[in-house]
Structure formats: C-alpha cells, structure tokens
Image 1 (cartoon, helix red, strand yellow):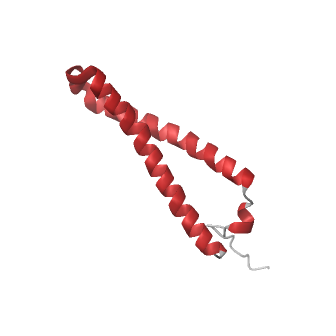
Image 2 (cartoon, one colour):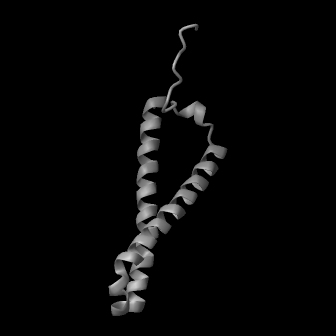
Image 3 (cartoon, helix red, strand yellow):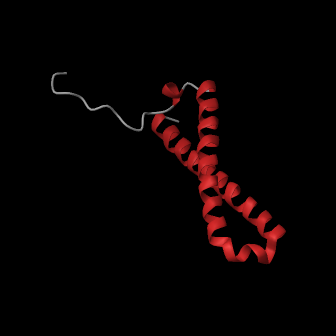
Length: 93
C-alpha cells in the first residue's frame, strides 16, 4: 500500500477508535448510575448526562493523545503516512 492509502486507513481507524472510546466512556457510567440510583436520578438526568458527556470528552482527549504518542514512538509516521496538511510554497522558492 502507498502512503496515501495508509493515511486514509489510519485516519478512519483512529476515528472509529475515538468514537468507540467516547461511547464507552459516556454510556458505561450512565448505565451504572441509572442502575444504582434509578428514579432519584431522573430529575437531574440532563445535568448528569451533560457532565458525563464533557467528562467523557476530556478523558477521551487524554486517552487518544496517549495512544497516538505510543503509536508514534513505535512507528515512523513519516515513513508510512503522508502529511495531512502540506506546507504552502512561497513565491521565492
């Protein structure tokens, strides 16, 4: 496979990983809280959902950064992947 194909597949895989991690970090605590508190939680469910969503977002950010750092330590990204954003050439060059 060439660099462009590797880049597309890596980006798709990273996106799927990101979405699944986000879903797990949001849904699992929500289901646990609903199972424990049942009716007592129903009045504040929107607030709890919002707090869980933002908490999952922040946790996902750190997990994704950690995983990408570990992958970039093991894999030479320049060798296998094409840059997503290319530098613009200036007129003098």
